[in-house]
Length: 266
Image (tube, rainbow, N blue to C red; front, side, top):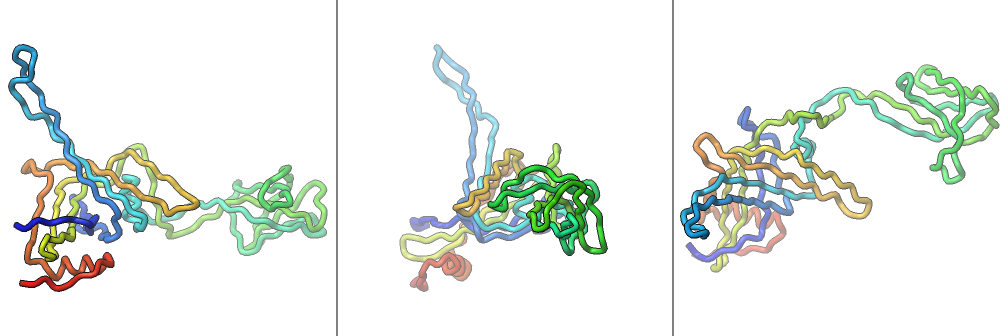
């Protein structure tokens, strides 16, 4: 086999080991790291290591990307993606009328979720809480102050609403997600300028529950997924298949990455 190099994080198909069905496909990985560790145990002679015994293997996969889908986010959080109702907190600025009333149109609020505050000139900082009564009038939220509230006064209204058919990921004390099978295809280039494909299959992966979810106002979030790679029933962790005649697939991957290619000479 010719010398080759890899400059690709690969495309992956993530499958559920429970059902065998694909959960998602991604071609947006920026990093894909596979690591295997094994600590040997030694019998000593005269105080020095003399006979080695292989230790247990530990293997992990770490994937990094900035563009993801909902199923990938649920994998990162080691939880299932479900659909259902969700209670959402919101804030609006209203203005008092001559009757000490503030009206927010098209707001159906959850009872017990409301409060009202004076707001500073910056429109953000809240001041003293305003006592009063909240009522639902058709599709509008109405707040009537019980004390003094001058006409034109800006009021910050906090409330919650219920949204139906929302995609939800709930992180619980016990992980609900199943084990996964990862199938990756990786673009490879030989010293002769040919483009090949390396296929990798990781048979049994489990998402770690060590989660760091960092939001950044200046840069895209780097979503990191870490999975433990466990052996299958045959004791296998991963299988690598180097396909030398897979020119079309490899060239398509390179083109998708924006890498200029040429047809390899035979």
